[in-house]
Length: 525
Image (cartoon, rainbow, N blue to C red; front, side, top):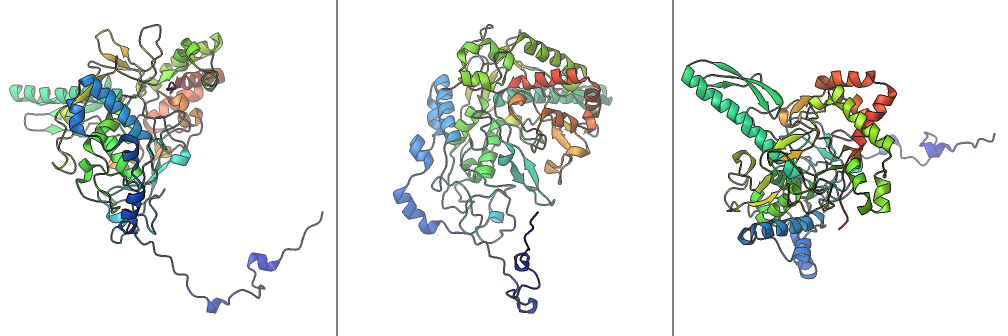
């Protein structure tokens, strides 16, 4: 075999006569990341171009105009305009992006090192990430619009309080059924508040202390010790001491859809809502009032009114409405053997205690979503910016049972693929496979820093509806298959993992068939 003689200079050898002598080298100076004052070119750009909001919607949405409409008309209008706001690519005239040095607007990595005037570290409110995109749909598109994001879309975050060192990653979750999830959280919160408040009243009347089991919709959050003078929360688990169930983000840190939307716009896009920062240009991009109160209302309604995730078995029942491409995507038609495997897998899911955290269904007594919410813990009493923006005077609303606009294919039951199933009591059944509680998942999932100060290995139970369409898995996409995701479970889920390992290969395959059956579907417009 012929082996060529290496050229020593190619390796930077000491024999390379062209090398600069060591004692003659000058230390390399790190280029300075200078903030760029966009105002220098802003006026020229504004003459020749227009913001995407102006182009697509003719201007920002007026909250008062929405409130003046017929309720159903207002909901449809807000949903359609929210759809536009979700999908458009914002530009500099909208205020997208921020100063991340040398004129750049976007970064995949937080830049707390940029501390000069008008630089990343001085933006208010402080950022934990980005901005890393110019549209919502750029990170929520797997396998369809409003879905999740792949690992290439992972968000790199730092401690928002800037007290802990390190970085963590977050995979973008799908947005299907968000309004339904908030309604579950609202009713659970009401149950917990009622248990505590009634116990305090009873303790005052009886002059006796008591221990109260804090259980909402069958989910135990531990105990509180109650006296007439105080409540001891030391034995509370999986929730904050205010007893508010916060169903969004991987750590359960955000309570309601509007706050989620407003925060994502600020963090990921650099689009600062008026209700967040007032009339100030707090990110130094020469644009203020980047998203109006009406804009955020429309985005909140659009996200909250997303259809529910479905199952392959349901899609199989309306297969004549699906294109060949859709059938191929979801592995349809299902054979009798396929359906049997899914059904057996569901039984195994329950038998190994997965359902103790991934609760198959919750019921909400009232299926009507309000924006702003009627629940005091799930709406703004004042906006983060104060009174400058003006709180909505009237709630927009829609019904989970009748008003979901997407996925209109009708099932044998009479409901559509998008609508939620009605319970015997006139409420809605939410088959989300979750419990909205935080759990310690063990050392294998522990992160570099403790986001939210809830525990580095503590995460909100991930709702499994849609899991068959949202690989990879877990908070940072580390698990490329569902089997990996299961085997990463530890801590409170250690026993279920052990039971999974004890299953036969055939039983494991059936379990995976059941999970793969839980999918996201969006009918073409």
